[in-house]
Image 1 (cartoon, rainbow, N blue to C red):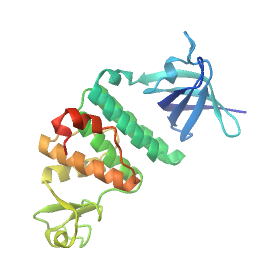
Image 2 (image 1 turned 90 degrees about the vertical axis):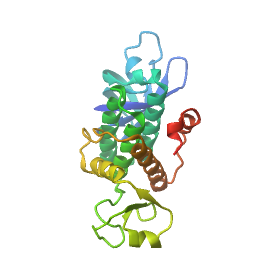
Image 3 (image 1 turned 120 degrees about the horizontal axis):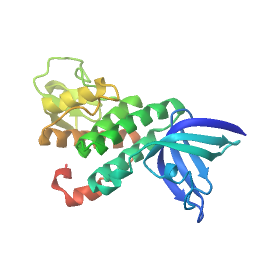
Image 4 (image 1 turned 90 degrees about the horizontal axis):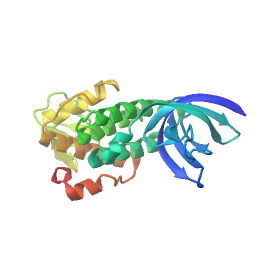
Length: 251
């Protein structure tokens, strides 16, 4: 049985008994893994705090043939304060669901984890949750190899475009002429296009450092939500509750 040390973020915790639970970790070195945390629910357990959802820590694991068991952990930081803010918590949960679905291999998971940690940190600092989760979605698609084409027309490659159209079928912007031949395109304001370019061109520490007008943010959120759903072939519903109680989510 090998001993492994890795940093990771707890994205799920499931009770299996009065004293034990299983946690799901996004890790830097091992990909997405399930870990048996025996005794973690006991009062005063040294591993109790480090096995809560939204906790980022250093974990010492025993690796069996196909399973991981927790031997010890030290908390680096935790984002559990997001649970006191309904909007921030909902967007954080949405981002975690996306990250979990995107964690396909060790290298990809490490990149996804880094992007997610910066996003959760931005939420804790009070940044606009809709902007953060939208930027996360676009950058996540770039990590997975599906970045939207934003530097020229996705069909004819012209860079001379008076009006921008976004095509989900062509995964990027179209010029006026090509947009006439395409279906399901939407007009794209320059501010929204610049925001997408910023996201694609920034490293993970700077990807969330921009501001948008309410209209441009609504457009970005609309594009990000549909784009990620179509690329991952899944309907993400965690933000639906916010759409029921807040008009700004009606996009």
